[in-house]
Image 1: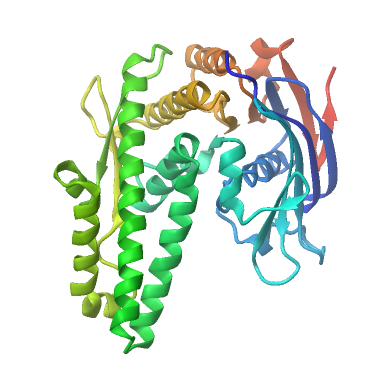
Image 2: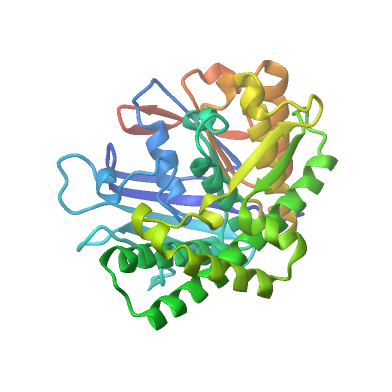
Length: 373
């Protein structure tokens, strides 16, 4: 049985609507209930910053600072892991828009280090349009899942994006030293192919987990559409790197005009369809789309629980309101079976009635959090 990865203590300073908050938690499930605008999602957002990236709202770091506060913001947590207790901290640096991370009192190289310690996954109402929008949010969703299987993927993504920006700057400002561009594109090709390979491996494992799932949710079929991913169907990684570097060199003129790169894993897309009907997720009802997303997240969490000895912490914002009673209970049962910790929010505490006695209920009102007996 995987050890329960659980947040035991949370401290916030000047984070969104919270001037200061201290919480002690001892439960596998945490229910946050209260009216809209009370601060429930802000708490989940704080927890999402215990992983790489810009949090569940994709906000600029300065926007997270509480209105009227001038010293930035911070999130501190004590987390139980299979390897012992960890003290995690993150917040806005005093100079520039940069996120600092501390692990057991020591500065970490960057947010990517958090993926090595624990996993965090989330579903929010904004993600209800995941299958209807462009590919960018689907790539981010997939990459967060990959972090759970392969923590180094967070560094690859950050490194590739840095190289992509640097190449765009050199092409824009040009003319650049060809040797410098060659070296940068070679490095970019290596990171890009590694990213694509990690995504492919993650999807293969997810497909296996979804095929074996029996949780009352539809089975999604996942496909990764992308040029580099297609190359890896027939080419070894080293040959794919050479081809990608050559494509980057040949496309310099076009990419200089567009300000980006026309080919690469930053253009890939995650395609999802319902296995039972063959219908693309974008054509399914809103409820079925939500159910497909839940199935993917649960499958990912099961794999992570088995392989990393710890399920990810799940942040499920207003998810129960979109499910009928049967699927709602199926979700609660599946989350409990993971042996991890899940934070669920809702305006109606009645949706969580079946969790009484096994979940910690927190009432949230006007940025005040009260533990209910």
